[in-house]
Amino acid sequence: MTGPFQNLLLGLRVLADELSWVAIRAMREMEMRQLRKRLAEERRTLEKLDATGPEDEAELCRRQIDFLSEELDFLASEMQAKRADMLARRAARFGLDAS
Picture 1 (cartoon, one colour):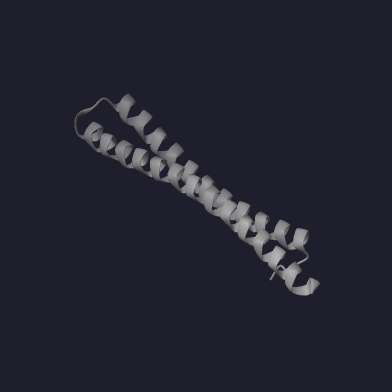
Picture 2 (cartoon, rainbow, N blue to C red; picture 1 turned 45 degrees about the vertical axis):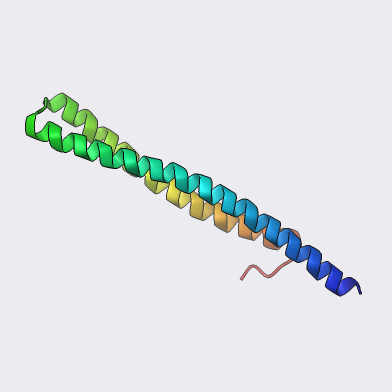
């Protein structure tokens, strides 16, 4: 009788682990969505500045665009790495096959 009970407990633990990942992912996606909006806003601002604005403001806007792009790339790669780490830790913690 311990086999089915152990399977049930393992299933509940995996479910709880997945629910925590869903929450983390949702928060990170929200942050990335805000950064994408900010990036689009900066690009629109740069278009206006390139047409009529001073060069120093346009350069500042270009730097901000570069920073936001790098930040988005970093957050995406960090999220992938965190997922891989969570799966590896889960496999080790529950004695599961990692593949």
